[in-house]
Length: 182
Image (cartoon, rainbow, N blue to C red; front, side, top):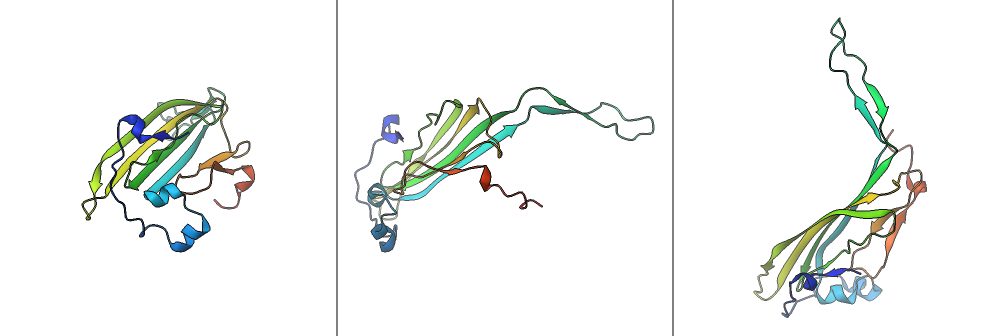
C-alpha cells in the first residue's frame, strides 16, 4: 500500500486545479489514466529499478612489476558466493496535491530493506497563483538473500499510480538477447 505524503505531515491544499491540459481526450476515454490522476495530474512519475549482481570474486593485483618492468598478472580470487542488491529510484511531480509515494515494503522474503532516502522539495506556485506543484524523490536499497541474475531471475518493472494498471511488469531470463552487445 503506498505511503501517503499526508502521513508524513504534509497536508493536501484544497485549491482548484485545471486538468484540461493533462491527458488527451482519447487517453481519458480509453481508461488509461486513473481518476486520481485526472483530479490532480502527475507531471512526472518515474520508477527506475536496478538489480546488481556480484559474483563474489575480487581482483588481487601484485604490488610490484617483473624485473624487466613488465606488469605481473593479477590473481582473481573467490571470496564469497554470489550476492545481490535491488536499488529502486523514483521521482514524482504532481499538481494540486502531494504525490503518492511507492511503498518501500519488500515484495517478497528474498528482499531486506537496507536503506532508504526520501526527499521533498518545497511546493512551486503556478502562474495562476492558485495551483501548487509538489515534488518528491527517493531511493530504496534492498539486500537480496539470493541474488537475481539474467539466467535465474524475474525482474520487476514498477508501475506508476497515474495509470489504471496495477502490480508490476515482469521481465524474465528469456528477455535477454546474447547478440545485442556484440
